[in-house]
Image (cartoon, rainbow, N blue to C red; front, side, top):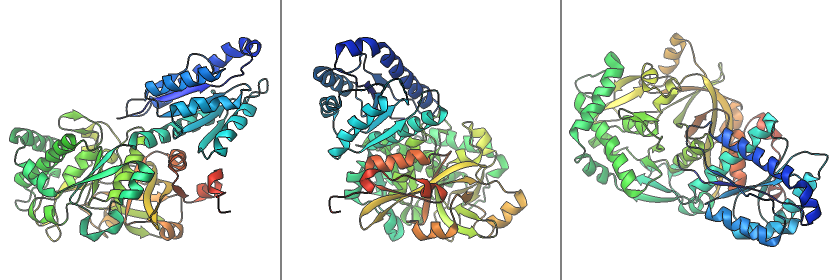
Length: 501
């Protein structure tokens, strides 16, 4: 997974007789915080980003400038400003102006009675905010799990912010069936996320499919057959060896074009051109989002069904804040009030990883069935993938626009595992041949319905609410947090004041 280096510095006093006493302890503090980052970020599924520390505390203007240059040359795109003692606040400016004033900044202090680190933090961070620099603050100890979790949440948010800047979204075919909530709005996409889009006609995929190695396609089909057995339900019409191979050709062609064009995430229109004349995109989209295929482990590649662009951006954010986990794309299909449970299903790209949350495809595929595509909707045929997502904690989210201004709806919740009979009954009320997430939210039906921006929801395993809120604050978009967590959120100063007030 792509990452960007994180810089760490500690500002100090300029008086030599003071720094002679505190330099050693300050360096020890800096190293401890750096180790928290290295250890915590290594727990993710992606490669941890480098953490670059400055070898001495900053005690002069020249040191501040040199530290900024060192971090910039190391490729640091975010910085943790550590505080343990009183420092001379003005020295932050030669550091930050050299590194880049738009760099995400976390001001981090020990809560230490012996040294006035909190005083240095508020004096220095306050100077930055006076000039409109959006900073974030954290006070605590390196041995406090809550403080460390918040530090890692910020780091994941900074990774999402800085890694996505400059990325390109591969838009195959345009938004599907006129779904305007899935349209790629270029200006907010660039301004808020730093991501541009390149639209490519689906014809290019169809032509590229003709060049794909038939032997490789056969290996893919045989992999599915070996893992699924009788749960690969060939029917001689909609789902045959040939139509499954067509879906695998589409996957390999999309993978090929993504690499050729330098796409970092993508979306596939599918309906109606591909689904009526080529094949259903479900298998290709699933494999894109999974962390493996028949050739072995790989990085999940975000691919949004129906080329829903704001879904793709949401999924990319979720991928980065989770450390590289596969993400989910779901239809907001049906609410069961007696169970306080959502049925989120669609003929599309539920990563098979969610069947068991395993990096062993055999474990996940033990819960999968490939059904013939519904001829009523998908005349070209192929397989629909069906499974029920495994139980576990989840974070659900979706980007939207209000009057051309982006916002992110966020709620935690869970994926619920139901008894087989009940699951089959409920699935029969929508479509039993599609994948289902039985989603319970930490928010009411009424609140969700009142604010949710689209018919597609996205999700990722685990609780990443704090990272998503930090990400929104870093990018300047509004986080709309549902449930009790939304009531507890402390709004940053830039959401409370404005030049017009």
